[in-house]
Length: 302
Image 1 (cartoon, rainbow, N blue to C red):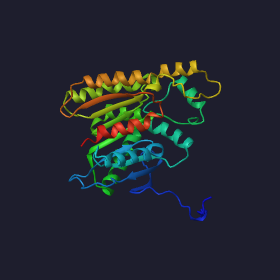
Image 2: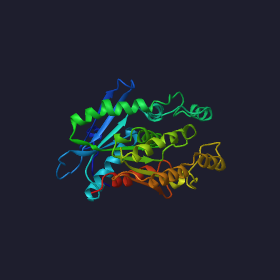
Image 3: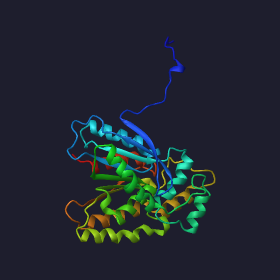
Image 4: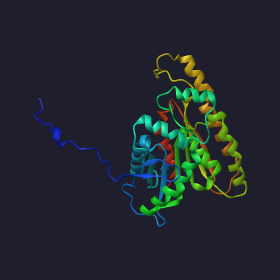
């Protein structure tokens, strides 16, 4: 039997090295955000123009995963060091899930989708369609604060988004492609509002044909986002047939592959690059670490 004594009184909150957080209330959206910032760990020398900076939506959920991936791939000398800025709410899961609906979605849901959202405790009572205001908050309020506080190069800015956040990333890519150098678009909700986001795709095409922008775009999704995984336990009352029908209707993999093929076929200016990756045997949530890892390699090549 061990003689080690555990001193419960000596416990303390976990603190993440090289990271900090602070809150900001936006005059544009009227909402308060929790901002998480991770500095480059073990960087040998600061680039003359500053470090690349990654803006990561759903910071409450994905910040630590991305920060760890940055550290480990940096240790392996696989990617360049970068600052990571997570944007969240500092609230419980349910509150954050409702609030992100307003910030990340560019349009209102159709009636059938709204009925389903109202039936879920995660989205009941949410508002929608304020993605443009959230974009303005990021570029007009948050970005100047980041630039004044950390040695970053916004010419090497990256936007990451998953699910609704992936749809937000497409909204910015199609309507404001000059905002970020690289777009990491994971599992985007392209089918939202009947695929309304695709109506804006032509704006990106026109801007590139005029040599106005040359973004780098990586689209990702998981195989099991359109094919029900055998290991997934369903909620009571939902059959596997019903869930498969829903996944098929969402068409996540189909939509990502199709958009990826169109973007890869575009002949953009020098520097333009687009790719799409489907990760085998990953679900809508389990794909997040894989997509972050591959996304960092795409966004921060040596």
